[in-house]
Image 1 (cartoon, rainbow, N blue to C red):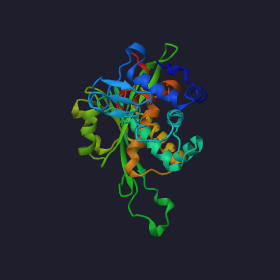
Image 2: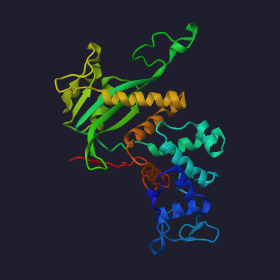
Image 3: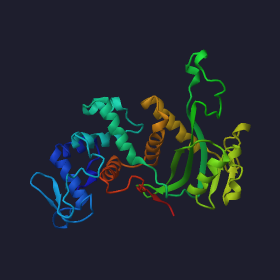
Image 4: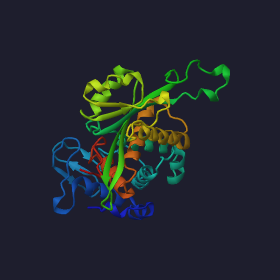
Length: 331
């Protein structure tokens, strides 16, 4: 099996995956094992009656299908070299604020449309885990993406789009768990885990069911003074409010009531849009949010670990929305 810890840099990764055969062998060995333990499973019928031919393709004697090692992966139906796919995955997963399709196209010598297609294929692997609950201390906040009316001519501006208006903006709701991890030195270190999603509105009917679904009962929930959060305390949570309208940004004597961490994530996400992607359509906004959450939640992770996780998800070995556990929470 491949030791992914050796890929601590782009140079190390490209020196190993330097041709198509090495890339194919990596997929085969990771999916179906090595040596005597190697067991080829048909992606069509799930049977173990598969044989590898001299041409490099597989044949299932149970359902009579022929297939390649790329079937059931994000590389299926793509004529691009696997070498370019692997380099793209490494670049996408290691850049802290993302990489644009134009930059990726220049880096691996493909067209911008091809690079855009590759980026969205890889982003599909960032999907957030819907079964993972946030617990303990959780900050909640909402943000509005788009709607830069000030850059338009006065005659072209949409009226009454200030504040929480959704005429030209898309609301996004986020939750962030405050936690601690044990770092490489064996010391406790503050860590936060975020999940976010596009929502239709920021009212009680929309936000309260989301809070109930993703935040564990008994947790302490920190919010601002938005009326949509008024009933949070009656849902089995300890609800603490920081009144931003009264210029309160850190409340209580111990300084524990604030939403600064989730607001820091929104700032990071906006800089990712402004500095890298420039503009995002509503149709694809959720995939960019998933990407931002993945980058935030794995910001202390080694490039080799992040690439290993991305590789396993790309070949279907791990479900895209599975939990990516690379840190140990303190007891």
